[in-house]
Image (cartoon, rainbow, N blue to C red):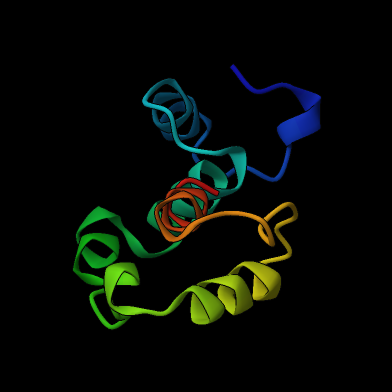
Length: 88
């Protein structure tokens, strides 16, 4: 379970479940805090507005990686960039 280092987590149990399922620390924290704030049903309805990464060009994917503050994206191919963005 999260200890002192994760004191900002609003739903530590959900955070640990998401981490066990393979979610990144950032993503697990974001989801668990959103669920605690807005409720599970409200979080489940959110989303669906972003375009599919497969429809974007390599340059667009690199720009998105840069926006997110990721590193090591410049030499990656399209499939690798998509994987990196989906799993950050």
